Length: 80
Image (cartoon, rainbow, N blue to C red):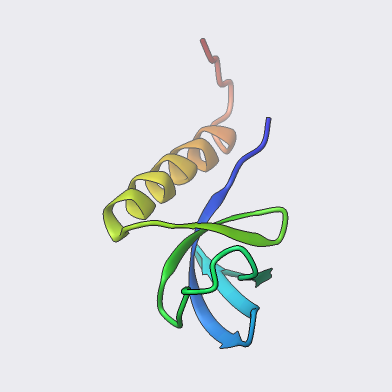
């Protein structure tokens, strides 16, 4: 399964960006989003910003990721 992560562009030089996803910073290319600018929220997959998204959608995804992280830290977990 492939997953694109919401992240905010915190540095941008040409099409080279640094994005922040839940406190983690990654390098990403904005080649596919030439209109992307500093501060934008984007979906990042395989090192590329592939789509602009709004704040609400990003927050929903970050909350789901946090829930998964909490579940992984739970002893004696049962899923399904």
